Image 1: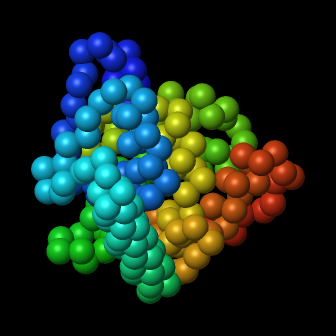
Image 2: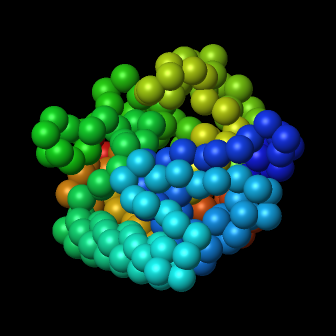
Image 3: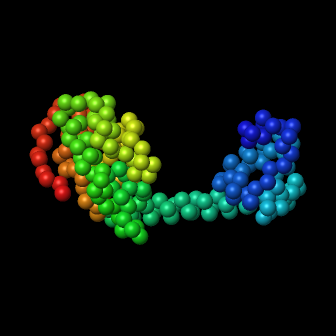
Amino acid sequence: LEYCRKHRSKVTHVVFADLSRLARNVADQSVTLTQFEKLGIVPVSCDERIEDTAAGKLSVNLLGVINQFFSDNLSERTKYRMSVGVKEGRHLHLAPIGYVNGENGSGLRVDTERAALVRQAFEWVATRSYSLEEVLRRLKLLGLTTRRAGRPINRQTQSRMLRNPIYAGWVVSGDTKARGQHEPIISQELFDAVQDALDGKAASPIVRKKVN
């Protein structure tokens, strides 16, 4: 729409596959078509007829309702399946640094190239002897990189990593939290100690446990 407004004198038609691709709910569809009308732009659907008649407007509105139903229904089914997966302890997204996705959806596997550096980062933060900037500098020097792009991690990536309970063996999605099927990289005690350090809470003694 912004492009159409800026090039109002040049844009005469907007072509789209069907109304479901133009908007996913009735409200957005109505607003978009109204804006087209104000700008003098003719909407053209490849699969549907859009007519400026009472019957044509009714048809467009009914299609909008149906499209929204399918979109909402798909969203509900996706959320349900995600919730079930999390409750079963399965991580259903791209693996975070320190893990790799198993073949054929077999779950998370420890990334032998990066897991030790991830564990080291948590241990450094837990000692409270190093600033986050210093921890990041050390990780870069040791070669910790993102798995997809192979780039050195940045401050945002480090922050997400240190806050992610997946490293202690948990799977979290929204308000749902369950013990994961994957192997933890750090102990729960170490994870809790790091959260306290990040939150500025008083230090608690860490029970050292070996995590293979």
